[in-house]
Length: 460
Ligand code: HEM
Picture 1 (cartoon, rainbow, N blue to C red):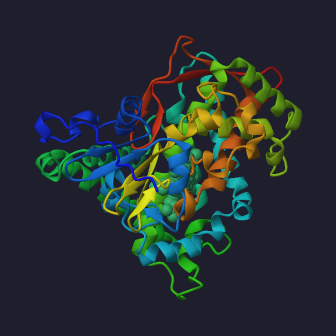
Picture 2: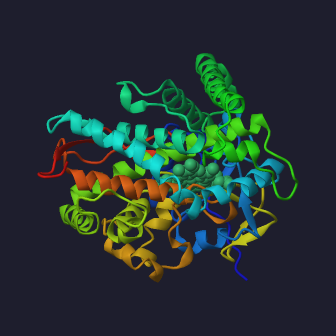
Picture 3: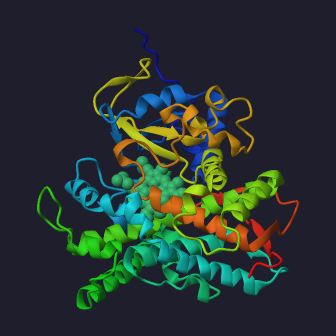
């Protein structure tokens, strides 16, 4: 049996600072990618308050998919987010009872059938985006990340708890969205700082607490209103969370826990979805033949019709574009696991439970052994025959029992919005020489990417 030790990246300043100087606190993922080029597909970092192992290829990562030997570890930015979202689904420790309870209660309402029923609300918000872009006219530079964030935010608000943030009706985004971005950025920074340094940054710490309190209050108000004015006919998630009993314990979720789940849906669902949509349009515009094919598909399947649930499974090329976008650059750049008991990663590298393992999704999704030498090219065609790839090779929605509960929701939302935009508009880059730069808040998206849209002749 092989037994290899994991290479430690050389520590800086005589070891006093460990590898902290190697990590850019405002964009840790980028540092992980750079270190992969320097030190290979598995390496260890000493971040002083924790040691972590980063793994970056299919062979290593497919071993860590095993829920029997590994489990999610809530560390780094996720742990720093706990003051905001506590033991809700995304940030619960594996042994917290509320994860199991909420998972059992919420799984059915995030299933494909339940999500289909949310189509009217999704189309409601989508039509607001189309109307806004139409009114801008062909010369307006649209900061598409911002508008996709409005879209994703409002879609979750409406589908999950019947609340309209109405982000399309004002120039500034709803204060909740701004507070949330600030909290995400601060949580990301805290993950690469010592606890002492976080305490010393007194103003940032105070802002973090104030933002969180304001967001909690808004969620609590929505819950209170619903309790006072029940909406028995609504199919939204809030109704389920308030009324549904956990089949195993017979208990309902507490009011406090519902608040954390609401905040979680907004955190987990808005930047991921909006980042993916921004990347997708960037790729389509950079690869005009893919844009053309996608629009042709919309014209064939949808024509001038109103989109219905039956169109969605027929939009196969758009679905492939979404999958390829998520492969090319997953908005969530990594998930973290640890071994439940001492074991060997891929039968080779000794690992103990104390060391979190960061699964670098970019490494997985650009592993040339799986995706070929053209892995750095955007080719939706490869996703039309998705099943030819091994099961663990495409993991933008995470792994195992802790993978994304909102996947069907996000996929439906993205596919309808791409279809409606291509149906109605001719999209171009506002600045044809734009070259992609990434921006990170916890998730990544293209920085300062702007588009222009012109209504297609005869499409009204
Ligand atoms: C978990 C990606 C959309 C809710 C996750 C995880 C990933 C992910 C990678 C696993 C995180 C980990 O292991 O630490 C994405 C992507 C999305 C998306 C790429 C869109 C393109 C959504 C939406 C919602 C949502 C729309 C809700 C409305 C959640 C929740 C979890 C989760 C609640 C935690 C699940 C658990 O641990 O039980 N997502 N997500 N996500 N996502 Fe998503």
